[in-house]
Length: 193
Ligand code: GLN
Image 1 (spheres, rainbow, N blue to C red):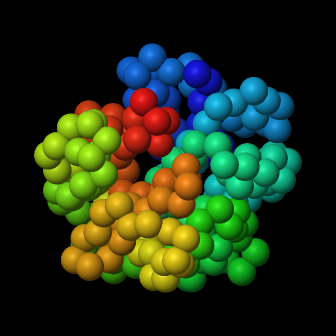
Image 2: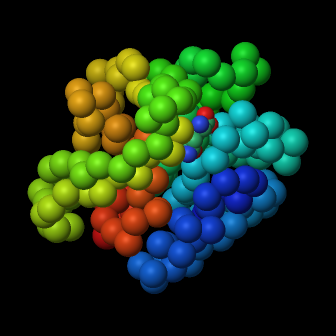
């Protein structure tokens, strides 16, 4: 199995490490040809405005959009979740929206004082899939909020009533950073392993 990690900016190296720990071949995606033959794609956290400009500059927008809307396994974390949304609030007006998930994301939604925090999350699907019971430790770094979640989107986890992990088909988005904890279960969930 070969899974790409968008490697324009942000926390891509940690995703590569998680994938490799699962025995998956990880490909750093910087140019359109790097998308060839991938079985899945990870859009990492970082700065969605910068990622967006990088997608445009590297000619990747069309190919990445086609991939994330193709039904293939996709994981978007934090800024990656913002890119997957249909709409972004408090972003740049020209920010790329890949529209793979019917959600509206608001950037930096948790305010300045508590803009980074960690908390244990209940993700019932992990236990249901036999990936292991027990909470998933969520690391939130200037996280977005998912303010509107459409009927095609399932909430996998919430924090204080706000969705923080959602799925639609094989596309999964988290507003936290699952690659920063030594817990590969969400990557496994996305890859169907
Ligand atoms: N605040 C960032 C953005 O708006 C996301 C932060 C992150 O990915 N950790 O793109």
